[in-house]
Image 1 (cartoon, rainbow, N blue to C red):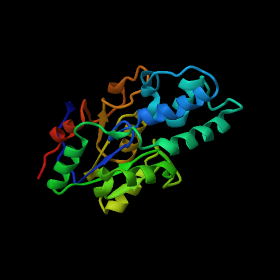
Image 2: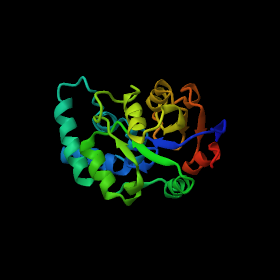
Image 3: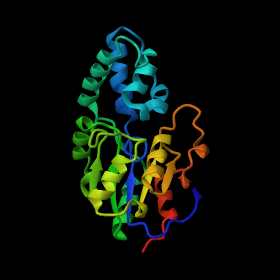
Image 4: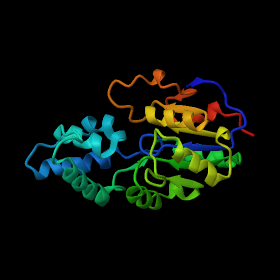
Length: 225
């Protein structure tokens, strides 16, 4: 853990994939099914995991070395989405310590919520299937507002729904766009080093106010009432 101790925080907002939940096994499985269906050999999860935070774009890059500019990208993306919809909670689980972290926050009267770039098509069934999210006070998907992160609007919408000013909401995420969005929204930010950081990520360059290497490290950053 690095960074200061935050005072006056009344809510903690989290990115979803790579911050609260490890969804890489299901994301990778959906992409791997596409490979297998085309007679290609299966790839290990370790190949998919670093790119899980990039969703379909990352999975198709790993599985087929396919970029969004490819003429078949949109068709492949929708095929991936169909496979992912069918398995999105089969292997996905919360990172170790997340349940305890949320319990402690609530025990001290802090609200919590989710701000993700994952579309509502997947966010809603996933969070409804996992009891962990039953106490979330707001869940903002990538298409809840007209903009997705790194734009600040999803975070500002979360603050509005909590009836709180942005500066008393802490945002925790595992991608540079999370930190950029939080800073633009006027929220203190925490980089989750245990998440899907991508290839050769330089987390220290993101400008986060603090960093944690495991979920419960967030508690050490808070002056709890």
